[in-house]
Image 1 (cartoon, rainbow, N blue to C red):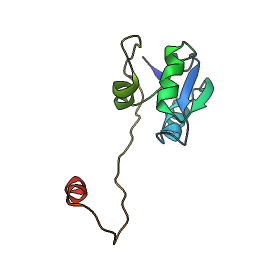
Image 2: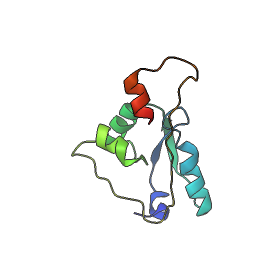
Image 3: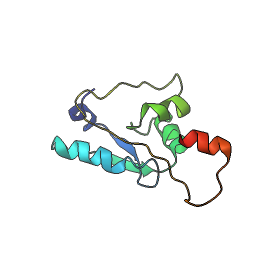
Length: 107
């Protein structure tokens, strides 16, 4: 699947309140000078995937979201021409007690 083909689909995209990939998606379309056909935004991944399962539109989500919320009735494919990169981080309160498991997780 290409971004050009995806630009013709009605998309339900994760909103800025959700995974934080809203801007990443917009930037990918902008780089390719393609218009995004967004019919809705949703910050709740469970609701978003239910909307897709119900046939309301397609979506762009990380594979990890599909692994958690998807099912066999959904079809997925990688986007070939998009350089969509996201990063992960960990945040905690400095100078506050952390349990040993939390410290191990951070390491």
